[in-house]
Amino acid sequence: MNDYRYYRPSAFPPVVKNLLIINVLVFIAQETFGKGSSFIDDFFALHDVRSEFFKPHQLLTYMFMHGGFDHILFNMLALWMFGSQLENYWGGKRFLQYYILTGLGAAVLHLIVLYFEMAPAFEQFKSAPQEIQNLYLRDPRFSPHIQITVGASGAIFGCLAAFGYLFPNTLIYVYFLIPIKAKWFVLIYGALELMLGISNSAGDTVAHFAHLGGAITGLIIVFIWNKTNRRTFY
Image 1: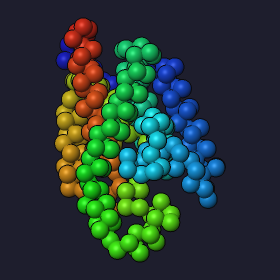
Image 2 (image 1 turned 135 degrees about the vertical axis):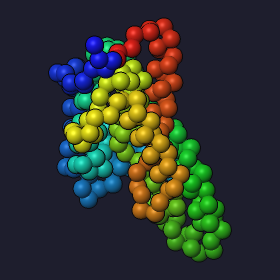
Image 3 (image 1 turned 120 degrees about the horizontal axis):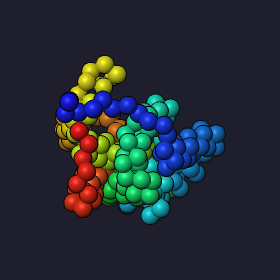
Image 4 (image 1 turned 180 degrees about the vertical axis):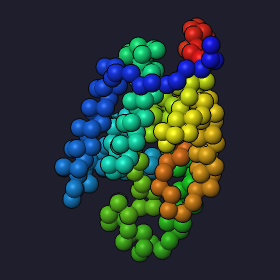
């Protein structure tokens, strides 16, 4: 008997189904009511903690927003693929707890990294002549630490990490063609995210450390939960 099983997505379990619906509805609201207005981004997207637009509830709401069709399509496909397996394994209540916690963990690590990344720009802004500061401060949107983060990617990376931990030898087909065991896929993807996050290339708008924050938070949670439940699928 093989030491792994092929991954076959199952029917939509209820929590995954409702998360998909909520994300799609929020995206429609963004596209419908967000055009020409910054209210949705200002109030619900995640802001730097130094921004006057930052509100604690954004740690939760940001994970239901997306930056474009490709963004939500990829995340929802991954939520269905990996989240369905996790919900079937854990049950709806535990999966929802896990999803929210990994999204929160992603936000926290992202904000910590962003705080230190933006510190030089913030100090440079404060050292600028007062006339320049006054010019920019007329609209808080121009302050150097104004940057929004949206997307379920942190929670999705948490789902991916849990999938690799619980189903390590299950095959994942990269681009639907290349088979790779889940444990190696998670390790390679995580290493790539770390490399991209450290390099911090100009023009790269992906929150790589949010992805890593979701994965790290997820692995910690799964490790704790798995100490009392030793079931692992191969």
